[in-house]
Amino acid sequence: MPGQRNNNRRAQQPLDLSYGHVMPQAPEIEKAVLGAMMIDKDAYLEVCNLLRPESFYEPRNQMVYDAILQLSRDESPVDVLTVTNMLGKMGKLDEVGGPGYIAELSSRVATSANIEYHANVVAEKFLSRQMIEYVNVIGKKAFDETYDIRDVMQEAEETLLELSMKNMKKDYSALGPVVDRAVKAVEEAYANNGSFTGIPSGLYKLDDITCGWQKSDLVIIAGRPAMGKTAFALSVAKNIAVDQKRPIAFFSLEMSDVQLANRLMSNACEIDGKKLLSGQLDREDWKRLDRTLSVLTDAPLFVDDTEGLSVMELRTKARRLQREHHIELIMIDYLQLMTASGMRYNSRQEEVSLISRSLKGLAKELNIPVLALSQLNRGVESREGAEGKRPQLSDLRESGAIEQDADMVIFLHRPEYYHILMSEDGFTDYRGKAEVIVSKHRKGATGIVTMDFMGEYTRFANPEDRKLGNSSPRDGGEVRDSAVNGENNDLPFPPADNNPPEV
Image 1 (spheres, rainbow, N blue to C red):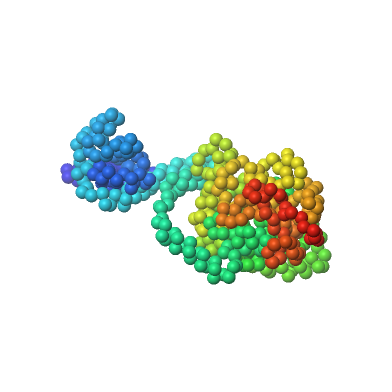
Image 2: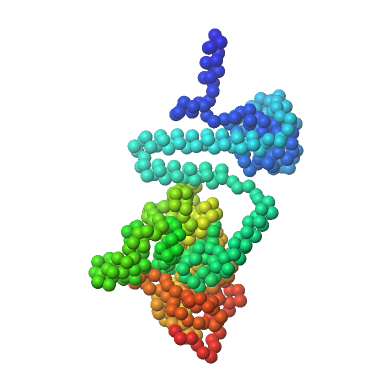
């Protein structure tokens, strides 16, 4: 008979029938957490960001925590009497076991010193139960042949991302250690004797403004179609991965990896892209290709051409690339082709907003710069004149959140595309030129850099040596104040002098 009683007791344990395991739970710790909140008025504040009513496994503990939650929201005292009274008002006092159960909870603990640790245990058990629930659902759908397996995989990504976003929280930091890290960064910059603190793009005048691509920054590179967004990204990728030998990841949602490689060969070898497509290379072309090919194949550039890449997939692949290859920068071509996961959206704008927030979070998590190409809306096309065609922050497509999340917004603009061949002051010849407009820069200055654009080579390049006004003594193009932000930039160009430069 004793053996039979033990078997009955075991049969009453809650089971996950799919796996035959007892569901993760910690009922005694749940009671300790609830009891601590009723003997210490500040205990709730220590755990309110960790726990929700459903975090508790036992239904009666969920009800008790819900009552404590209501009292705290009303700024009422939390103790045995007030919790008992609140449960009575909610009509749940008898369900939890009456006043005796509330008194039992408070008598189980003498101090709230360990409440944060106990609350973390409760939260982890809840997360484990959620994981099991989601795995069960996905497993059943994977067995069911009426479901498309690709849809099942997408749902699995969504649920995992949802769990991650709900449960990943970062605590605050005291100012002292943060200041120490900031001072260390200044000291390192000073030790570099004025060299860049970030990763140089290889476009010198742009680097003068940005000081290189900075760690944890989200950089948006935007433009209308045919402005050279991919050409700019490939030029920067070539300068970093091939010339500087820094490992980077390039996520291409628009082109296949072979198409990307062809354009990179055109960029690096200075061979017309049409020749590479047709195979009509002359002797000199073959020599240039042969000289450059070994350099390209050895470059630490990792390409992923997954179509419709989701935020979850990107995060997983980026973490793996950093762990295995120590990547220092991520490029994405382009943002609007990505998909977000984890929620249902009322509009595409909401989805793009989540994508941009997720990219900023990824940059902070991996502590590397993330460069994302982005489309602009058609507002540019409706405006007239040389200045009207220049992009503005309001032209960012589908979401103002992109502007908000980005540490830097760079526009690419080719006036020649709109048949604007000369600047309004007559000093700048726009043929074969492109403007790289730093319109937003959270950490520094804005400005406009004029670069050479060689479309046949898919390349942005530093112009020939020239001296313009007070620009940097280094080569690499003209720098002008940006007229985009409207701050002390009434003119799009500096006032003309009596000796205009050669163009």
